Amino acid sequence: MEYLLVKWVHIISSTILFGTGIGSAFYMFMANRHGQVSDVYFAPRHVVFADWVFTSPAVVIQLVTGLWLVELAGYEYSDSWVVWALILYFFIGICWLPVVWIQLKMRDYARDANQGNTCLPKAYWKLDKWWIILGSIAFPAVVIIFYLMVFKPDQFL
Image (tube, rainbow, N blue to C red; front, top):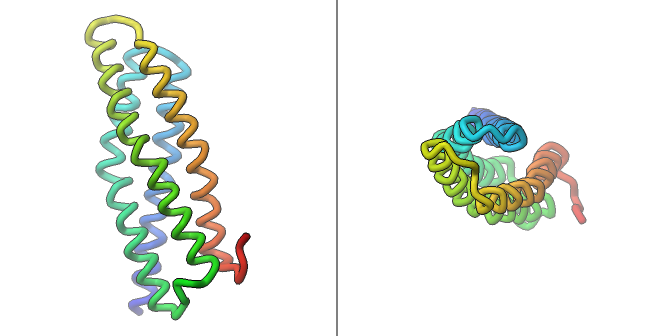
């Protein structure tokens, strides 16, 4: 029963993490492509909020329940799929932490432009480029982790 409960929490938190991430990315990307300052301001303001309310707790829950499941199921931390899942988890974190800062700066630039009825500064668009790059690198790693969790291959890479 403990295993199934921990697995359920792990699956729910991964769903929240993935869903919030891809949904937030979609709306922010689309708002930025539209270019309307009020829309652009709306997107990062709510993406930052969603990161704190949904993404951050899910990130912690994923690590805790993932390690707990390894223990409960009797896997070894040296198993290839576990090692790679952890490497990718921390790699994604290395990408995500700057993205959090970038989103805060983008929100502030968009707020200032919206309040001042001005265009978004060039600095906003530089941050947008980095936001896209880091997200594009991290997203495939998330998909690979899903693969590793489901298939648990004996050898990976």
